[in-house]
Length: 285
Image (cartoon, rainbow, N blue to C red):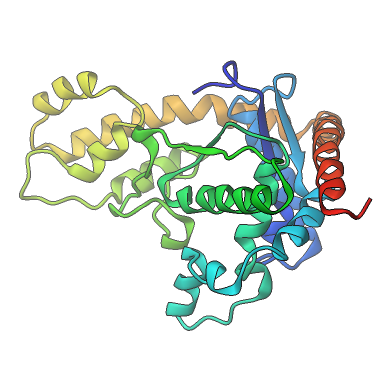
């Protein structure tokens, strides 16, 4: 999948983030950093709409309308809620209703597909269910979106073999310095009883084809240090240009503000039109 095949929308989910981040300065920094990250990895704001969730009030307004259709037992099936409950965490209403706001985020833009990782598939199912329920009650209004999961990155492996996650502390940062790359790769958990270090190979597959890796891993059979050093160089070659671009973007505040303004205008026009249609269907206008 590439941005040339679809009209793409990339949202900074700042309202979702409120369930975890409740500090204004930190929120502003995280939001700006995310937009810079999008640009640094190659998203072109002339071809992709990049916007902040909080700039489009239709998201939260539609979420309330959806809240009147979904039931508590239905939301209790959500993985995030069940996981929090299992760990004895106190769950705020934002976490509980997270799937409803996400459904609003998705359905306002009438998407055909939503690119996600395997662990996000349930959220697309929620969006599809909620769209279907609204359509059944008020008439055909929303498309039923499908998840788009790229098999090769459905689950990105971390340096310990589990799913890569900041909460597990097993990541290789996307804009890591050379020193951070070296430290992370050398920390990859390996099983000394095997010819091929599986966790090293799993990460390496994200950067090279298996055809390329076949010869490399055969030549360095059992040589874990050498294979890690090759992975380190491949990661430096991949991350280095993005890191340099990000450093340049960080200094151009005018560009960042322009992307935010233009993205908000485009997203708002589309979302407001869909919300107007919804409000007519439910009879409030």
